[in-house]
Image 1: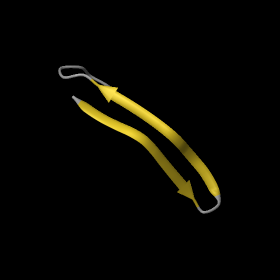
Image 2: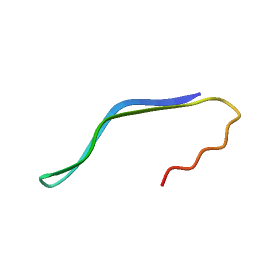
Image 3: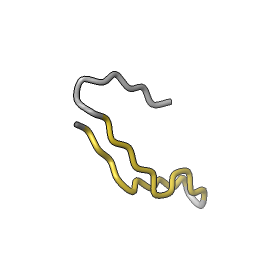
Image 4: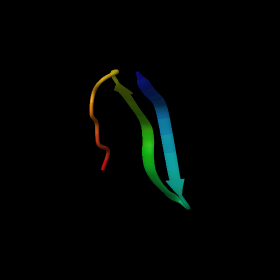
Length: 33
């Protein structure tokens, strides 16, 4: 399993991501755009 919790990303003053979490189970195919 791959997990990312509470991810945040800023570009200068722009807050692009705020508290984003994802959990990908083993054996699954997932694409992030």
